[in-house]
Image 1 (cartoon, rainbow, N blue to C red):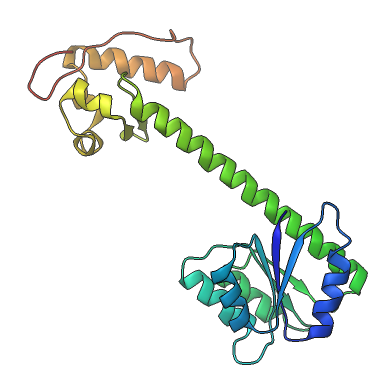
Image 2 (image 1 turned 180 degrees about the horizontal axis):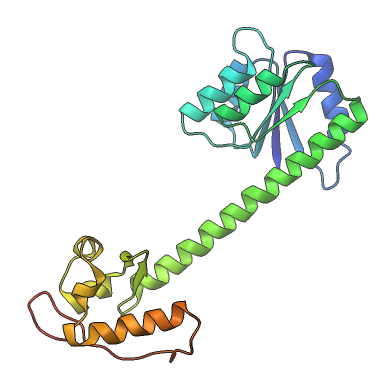
Amino acid sequence: MSRILLVDDEEELLDIALRFLKREEPPFKLFTAILAQEALQKLEEKQFDVVVSDYQMPEMDGLKLLKKLRDEGNLIPFIMFTGRGREEVAMRALNLGADYYLMKDAGSRSLYGELAHIIRKLLRQVQAEEALKESEKKYRNLTEQSLQSITIFQDGGVVYANPAAEQLTGYTIEEIRAISPKELIHPDDRKLVAGRLQDRLTGRSVPPSYECRMLHKDGGIR
């Protein structure tokens, strides 16, 4: 169940938010904080998925709360509530790293319906990002452990080389990334490789694989 932290110094508004958001299906797990300092403490104690914060609060307003979180490297999705005529606050919030803002002058039912929609949208984005990171992690683990040399070229340079590439070339991964890719290819085969790459870029039919000679750091050929 997604954990949502609502921050507002007006308890009546917190009660309204709770009443409307509790009707959502699937349900949210809702927590509240009266002041920004209390919100910071709860964020240290528990894991939350989204923060929904009022702007105008005593001692520390919503912008300062947002700035403190971002300065500390906390990238939790953040929705800013702003009052009527607070468009400049909304812009400042977005510049500080807020994900969304909502104007409080909407009617309660439509306001909290929109809030619930935005929360779910942010949750889906976070889930998609986490799934992508997990996929990239699995892919990296697979390539790192592969006995086959894997080297990725992009924009004229090497952007990735796995440990097996070190054994094939004799260069460290850092050295492979620093040199020109053509230096890894035997001079007599560079025209062949360049031609294959050009054919692929222009959409011509290219064999799924082909052989070329690689130069080892010690001058040998692989």
